[in-house]
Image (cartoon, rainbow, N blue to C red):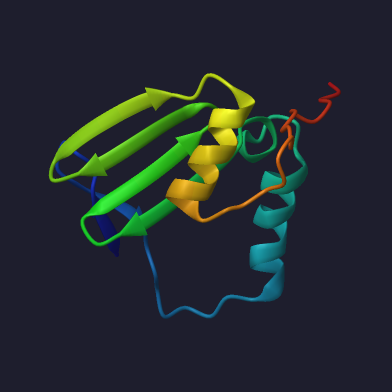
Length: 107
């Protein structure tokens, strides 16, 4: 079991087993989260980075920093600020002027 300090105590993130897994086991879940219109991975940009004693999470325009049992939240208000946060917190560098727009979702 992979656990993490979630700020309010330790919580389970992932479970690993010794059971065999086949490509189809992974393909179905991957296909769903990458293509289904209701998938949060299609509707909300999400980035996480874990460093010793610190976790940075960016969901849409909300940056959350968890460290030493404390959580800080910062709303990213401009596209320029988003590019700065992506570079500084996650080492993701995009050309100046890059804009992230949500995909068209058809129902």
